[in-house]
Each structure stands twice: as C-alpha cells, then as structure tokens.
Length: 617
Image (cartoon, helix red, strand yellow):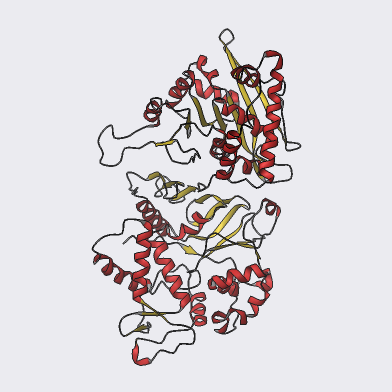
C-alpha cells in the first residue's frame, strides 16, 4: 500500500455554517441557498453535494455568491477581484477567491473530501484493505483495474446509511452515527490539516464490522482512498486543472501556482513545518520511483501525466526547506490558432511559418525560461507535411506530434545500481535518428554536444526543429559557437529560421507571450566573421501588433522556396500571394471552429489533399 501524500489546508475566511437542517443536504431543492444559485450552478450542486456544503460555509453575505463558469475565457484576465468557481473534472471544483491585501488571490480546490473529515476512518479502512489486497491471487495490472479493485473493497467495508434511515441499535457496535450537519460542524471546529486520530469508542460501525457512513462521507472516503493510494494525493486537483502552468512549493507555507488566466495565485494547500514538507517530498519522490536521499537530494523527473517535476530535499542546499516545482504539460497541445488567440503571433506569421516548414526549412524557437518555446514548437508541428516521418528527441517527453509516422525517443539517465554505459543521451539518440531516414527531426532543447550533430543533420539535408535558450539572434550565435555546443561558424547558416519569443509586460499591465521577431539567417562572411540575418516579422510593443518587414525582400521565400517550386525569377513576388492565401485559410478555419490541435491538423491534411495548397507555376 502506497503511503498518503498529505498537506495542510488553511481556509482564507472564517467559515459561516448556515443551519438549515439535514433536509438541505437530503433534498437540495428545499435549500434556500440552492434556490439563490444560478441555473448552471444548481446543476453542478445536484451532481456534487459537497459543492453545496462548501457554499454553506462560505461567507456569501460578505463576498457574494461566486460566479460559476464551465470554462474560463481570456477576457477574465482583467478582473481585479475574481470570485469564480469552475470545474476541473467531474468531481472537483476550484474557487478563485479574492485577497484584497495581496497581489496573489486564493486558489481553493473543492474536492469530495474537502468538508468531510473521514481521516479517523482511514486507518481502520487501510488496515482492512491491506488484508484484502494481500489475499488477491493476481495483482491488477493497469491503473484503471487497481482503482476498480480498491473501490470494490471499500464498498465491502462500508455500510452507507441513507437519508432518513434508522438503524436498529441491536445491529450497532459502538456509538451512534452522527448526521451530516453535526459531522461538518465537528470538522469546522477542528484543525483541517491535523493528523488523523484513532477512532474513539463511539466509532459507528455494524456488528459485522462495516463502518457506517453517510452517502457524502462514503464518496469522500472512496475519493481519498483512490486519490492518495493510486493518484497524486493532494496534488490531484492542481494536476487536473488545465488552466495551471506551474505548481511551486518554495518551502514551508502555501503552494503557489501560475494560472493561465489569473496569473500568480496562492493555494490554501500548504505545509506548516519542515518535517511535514520533508515527509511530503520523500513520499512524492517514491511515488515517481525516484527516491531522495541526503547523498542524492535532487530529483528531476516526469510525472505519470507527462508533467516535469524538480524536487530539492533538505535544508542543507535549500535554506527555506525542501521545495518542488511542477511544469504542467497539456494533454492536448495548443494549436497554432490557439496561440494566435493568445496574441503570441498573427495569421500572417503563421502562414509564413507554414510554407517554410512545409518546404523543409530548419527552425529554432529561442527565448528565456517560461517564454512558451515548447508550446510554440509543438503548435507548429501541424504545419509539417502529413506524409512526413517525424522523429522527436527529448530528455523529458513534452512534445506531441499529430503525424501517424512518429518515432518518439527519450533520453535515459543511468539509474542507481546500473553499470557504466547504461545511460542514453540526447547525443546518442540524435545520431541514431539520422539512420532512421526522418523527414523532420524535433529536438526538445539543444543545450550541449547534441547541437553539433543537429547542425550536421541540417547540412546533410535533414530539417531540424528545436527550442533554445537565448534572448536574441546575437546571443544565440554566441552560444552555438561557444562551449559546450561548439558549432563551427560556417555551419550556423544551415539554420534557416529563428523565432525570438519572450514573456513581456503590456503597457496596460499583465504578462503575455509574444514572438518578438521571426528571423532568417542568410549567411556567414568568412572575411568579416560576421553573420547576416534579417527580421521578416517584428512585434511593435506600442500597438501590440506585428509587422511583415520582410514582405518583398525575404531571402528564404524568394531564393529557396520559390526556387524549389520552379517559379521564374521574374515572378518570385507571387510567393507573397501564397502567404496571403494561407493566412486567409487559417482565419477561415479559426472562424469555423477548427481551433483544437487535432482538428486543425486533420483540416490542413484535407486542404492539402484537395490540392488547395498547390502553387501554380
């Protein structure tokens, strides 16, 4: 049995219990608060009674009834004091609660177990579950099978007392079951994050050993057992929330998150002392099969959902205590149209990149940390010809390619106890990829000696796409030609395109991601030892718009792609008409609703198959 992943929950308001009797929970339509809710909120509450229980402790007379939204739109970014509840999955909701005294508002996960203190029940259930699991003849192989097995066992260990049901006292062993209202009141007057106490002599159970729970408590217990034993414990709501980008714990205190809509938030989930935090990160590392020790206090790994996690253990190297950071990965990548929605680029830029990638240009997306490089690189894969063979090479798997002929390679670090030579580096994978006859090679990030192999691949005609850490063309060239990458200067112009991307602040406030420029590398002059490059698109920070500065003078379009297409020199200006046409196609697809990653790729495939992208010579 895997150990629980626990933390402390601290509410940012004084709970106000509205005493309406048990009928409010047994028959929601009799609840005055329920009748005050908007229609969409009533639907959520009917399916999730724990949400109504949360609303009953919320000081609605002071803060008002939250706005219930099925999904979040970008226009919510301008809200100064958001009071919003939205779902992150079928059973869990998140309340964005305003904090007038801080720039960071509160992030409150509302889970089925949020207001039901079944922790006293858990030790008994866990002990009995161990015996039942030990008696299994065959261990369930998949996560789904393990979840179903646990749910079945919990069902056998619990008696669910229905509303209004009276249990014959002769069948009881122990004290009387308490009603929901009493349970919640006890919960609110106790420490939410306190460790579980052993059950008292009045613990309600039947003579046959089954523990008596209300329907809400049963749902809470089942949820916690699955969440803590199989899934990622208290981190589950954060990992389930598609609007979260980063999850950070800097030490003792709350967990902080970076939200796509509400930016920096602080969670009600946190850690009260170093011992609690150390215990949490040790269990977290064990869950991902990367144990921490004093000799090996740093873990850099991947969670089951593909998110990247970094853990630092102990106060010896982290003076504020153990810490961890999780960089969320989207299950469904953003499409280039969603990138355009966010203002990172525009239709004309996307159309230009479309034709460049279709005709085999090599490209780097370069910028600082958290500038959205990987998101942009992934979004651009829909422009690669659908018949292409793609090979991706990463140290942490983040890229998702829509092509069916896709080989996904991931570097492997030497594990504890493994012999010499057991690690497989990105350099090794890149060399192997050249023997696989790919049309395009995608490298998650170039940072070392694998860069020389990537440029050798470009020189032999392979198109390469990658991300890179550099804030300008000049810095990029300096890093490429210096240690440890050490690319000969004469090789650099095999790279055709560089997108410089950054997280910038707009004049009106707020941080956004923008492509600052798209640049063509033209050539290297051995006499001056200088590189010539030109910016084909430039972002104007004053107007937050993009200018096609390369119209009429693009080296790649006129001297490379037009030549490939056999366009005569006197007609090469027609290549810009193709950019305009593709920009219009993307705009129409956007208006028609084909904004999702997979939908857009399938539509681009259909458009190409119908011959609509054929350039007449």
